[in-house]
Image 1 (cartoon, rainbow, N blue to C red):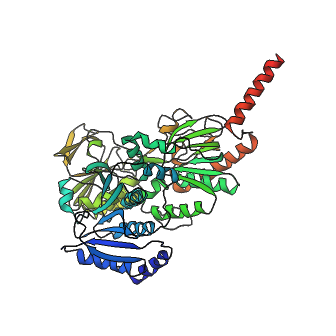
Image 2 (spheres, rainbow, N blue to C red):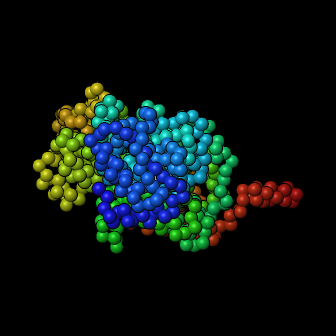
Length: 541
């Protein structure tokens, strides 16, 4: 299964291992067990620090095609049910390296929250090996398990455990269960998981109470192309820079094909995000990942309070939070997320193999989704609200060539219907005749554009009615010292290359601001100056 080239590449990573790691495989019979043992044995063969052991775990492991990781003979809390190939291969390798002592990738403030968990948390993550979003969830929870012995995390390949999939009525991945109950489904990441844990136990935020960073020159909120460009340009000016990102890479991570980034003829979203991270690491930039901004206090010195409880004081601020998938807002949408309603065709498309599905939206994203799905499902019906499709003609031409793609224009989606907890139809209105029709299907992929991630800025800067941050030609917002760049702003044409340029521009504007404005070194200093000025004026009077 694993080539000599892959194993040779892995060998280099194992040289930094500090602990012995054992893959403990549950004994028993299974059609895939021999393949699993061979797979793990190939990996173990590259280092004396690795070994495979077949053992009866007395019910700890799910089946004979399940295994756990031990580090120096101690259970790490990490389990895999299935053969972690495909996108999950990296999850296994990272789990192996992290268990052996390699530095974890979680921010210190996030790690503090995880360490504060005192009750047993048993996570189950149902995945598809073709899902590019699933590994992020698996890898995050694996790190949680390594940080806190009260936490276990099990990756479950839905393809090998169809009985469990049917029993729990799972129709989308990743699907995360906590202590046997549904915890999160659809596109989730470490930030979402942490926020959900805090919602269940608000006292976890106390783990970082009173913690704060040194005064920053520039703080960037957002880790996509605009945010990264802002941070790098600022760091190159010799400024003290921090980046706050719920998910580093943002929406770009969900883009599978990128062919319009000048000088890069073809790449993928995950590859580009990896390159962005490497570039950030070339500079002295503080990255606060998997946290969101809860509050911003305006003023000469801006104070940012994070969801982790930590605070950041900064002389200037750049908003580059991008955008997210827009929801239809019709009955049956939110209620059926994970039960037939989906937003990522790459992740959830395989669950609808040989079935009838719909794509809502006739722009580039919608037609691309239809083309992707057409190779998997029985049929795809595209519903476009307007009289004409908004996608590029080259994509429309490709869609018209597919026998299993039907395009319905002038269609207003009224509701998504479900029976026994599963989507079974979509109701739409023909806008030219006002006639209402019902189309039977089992899956609905919503692809109708993006919404700016600006809700936390509502009382801080001026927003348009659509939620975009209003900026001028130099990325200034309505608030002095606060700048904005990329898809979250009023700049037209939401493109990666444009976001990068806008990020650079926002950084240069912030640098210009810092040169021309005297900003107090600390809030205390600022207060003392104001007090002194007041006393002086009183004395003069």
